[in-house]
Length: 70
Image (cartoon, rainbow, N blue to C red; front, side, top):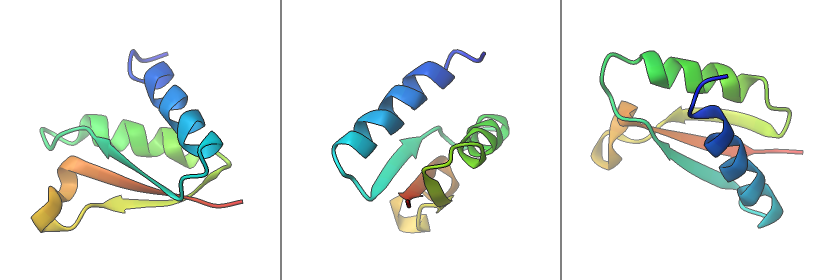
């Protein structure tokens, strides 16, 4: 398990309990390795409907926007 997985799962859980439709994850741009790992993790979460980069004017690939579905 990576050090970011537990805090991310806790944040996902809190967002779902609160009834949020979307979550914003700041992982930075860097080499993209962390972004890719987080998105692979999100792909295994049944409550995650989709994810995408933020618009360029809001941080672009340094942020992942996560949408929840049922």
